[in-house]
Image: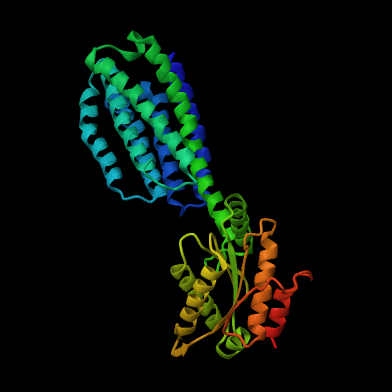
Length: 402
């Protein structure tokens, strides 16, 4: 039975070698893909040696051949190391296990039966598989948490199974595939599941990271590395849900760089981009961890200040306005100062207000700041007219372009 299981496993490995070879060649510079293919390549060589066993010398059939499966797990450890971007000392431990056991494998190749060489191979596999969870489980990457945990704990169970085979062979001096039928059946199930499960889990890890990166790119402004409009809307929805539950005021702030078009015309768009990037960095560093920074477009930014009433929001914004006014932007040999206009609006205990309405109120306050001479902070007054269409950002841009 075990021979049939191993035959099935060898056929599976050969198929996966072809599939992951193509997968790796599509993006050869991707180290995890490449080393994952090396894993199956080592297994494929082992499978070919298994098929050719009757025509091979004993030291190859029962020596080098039994080393190829532990080698494949060592290569898997390298692939995992590249994936989680950890230091390589654990992979050096993998190499050390192989180098230390290779002479023992060669010496045991003279055994009349393959029981001891096979058990030594099981020991090497167990040691290599014990390293893999040590690489994967400490990572704190949330996107890949599920496949990493599943792979890590599966390999821990696999280590237990392999050590049980080692104990039967060396501790009890019996053949695990003859003396312990239940262990033989368990081992067969583990071998077949292992061949299918590990590559699928590795692909799942890569896809989970890619999906998380794409989701991040969808909500982050590529120039300033703060939230874009989509990300800002999502953050606002989350904060408004919290506001409606706990009734703790929420403030929204809009800011616009004064005369930014003239600045771009005088110094060039590259200089304007540099100012936007540095300003976004200043805002992120000086705001609280719970605050949100986003770019609505052009030179206009938005801030979301959770659990912040009007007076506190106004004090925060005045501080930020002074910071940006006093900051010197060094663009080549040109030291530059810019000023900003700000509009502040708060929920003020109004449970019925929505995120777009609050943004609209902050727009009105920002428009007043622009209209009153710029370089100032204005707060929305509830007697202001807010019933008209929400076109204030368009009017602001038109005014700025004049």
